Image (tube, rainbow, N blue to C red; front, side, top):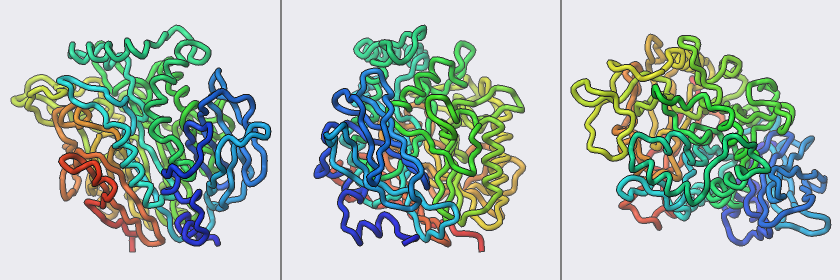
Length: 546
């Protein structure tokens, strides 16, 4: 049974509670549960759960064993459940109870196999930018985020393919502070104030929990996370990566304000959202327990907030990294991730102890839209060499990406780190070089064959933009930035088409010899109903080197 996948089990056991597609079904009785987001490793399960009413002492039963919950808010509606010392590669029956009261119907979740297990196949689902308040509008009434019904329809179509794990790549929420409240465009400032007046404002002098700040986080995050996922992913291990908006800012830098690294309040607010709504990364033997953001007193030894590992026996390892919280501004020594994290990534890349390997940064390699917090110095400048254009938001601005103009406070160390990571990926002898990311509100694929003075042609780096669930017109790079994503001047990317500004997701099927990647995309004028029949617009394979 070592090679049994979730899809095999569904077919053999006909367990409706187990199949991810069934997780989207209304047949499952959620009881008093508002949302469940689980993650798993070989020997542990971690759940984040919100309830429709306050709980006293809920308990998680895992195959009959009891694990007490930990309250994560001050009202008793949000709880964390950690179950450890579990059997690897096993389907566990989960139940939530309070005393003798069953709180919802039982369901199942599978632990991952041990690192040396011989696994023949695995299916991964990935998307980005799922957050955003429903009904939010930008300049001219332009829709900012897709209605929840469309996001959920895309998610349910993705889950119909029965993935074995899900990676949600950043921008789980949007509630920018300085970037929107102090925007250079007066109309954006007005629209932001209009919305924030209804929800409330943070008091940055206060703690998060036990103050009005806690209530505000629940008001703004529940509609973007709990209302979107509900219990759809209860039987699929989830891996959530933070990105810029998860720290309550856009990645902006100017003489007046620099958004990253985030300040103390924004980190505390981001940690609060994670603590309430989605799981941290469980410990893995190959990931140092003292990486930045790991082993905090309120999470546990080896549990990481920013850097994660998805390990599927000897078949696949994926290393996941947040490119925002620990960004540095130290010139040639700067990085989007700290040195300890880079050392871990390079060591895991060079280990070559699985048949396939993926880098999963929150921010992509191979494309630029002229944003500040990119690996690259490219910036959008008006035609004729005029002023740098930071954002356009639909204005009639004609510009071009260039390196002839300086990008304010861009750090050369960021590109140097990019070079070291891509060089390590390409130097693998037994595995293809591949990475998948998000952030740019687009979907596509390219092959990086050179970068600066690096010749990567022996093992070129596949780079994939996973596709956004929640972005709408105001979020497309061509509207917000005045350009579609393009390869940077210093990087050669072979691509069959420009990344598409469409909603979508990516499914990766991993077997012993290759990874088969399917890209799914949707946008008007296609009907909303067509999402239910969505098929890939592009399919390609990433073969192991012969």
